[in-house]
Length: 169
Image (cartoon, rainbow, N blue to C red):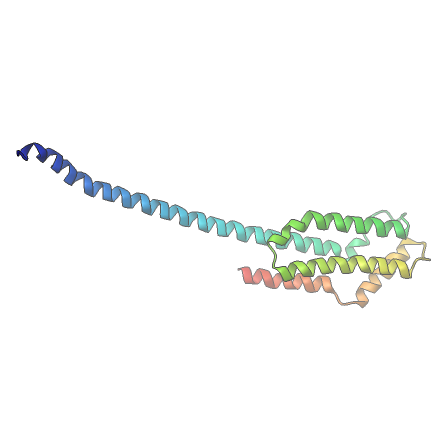
């Protein structure tokens, strides 16, 4: 058997094997690098989504404060119309922001829901206690005073959210 005819093939194989090993290592390292880059971008995006969720819920809670609620709507409304429109506005804004619960801690989300429910209850409780008041300004004053008498659960929730954000960073 004559091996001389196989020398060019053996030489080409000896040259090609290190090159193929090098290319293989390069491709695997490149894929590994890209996977790490995707993970970092994913974490960054997730962190940004969480911060945006906390921002939106903070804005929602600020709008829930009675001092801001009483500034809404026309002064010519009757108290029952004000209660209806305010509750409707709160519910619409809450539903708009409900998707943010995906990025909040469960206890934080529960505190937001509790704050919303407490404001709606306070609104109804004030209306029931002042059902003979015909002037909207008097109703708003009583509503604000009743909120001041209770603990400031909205500010407490916002402070809890600040602590959550500090833990994210």
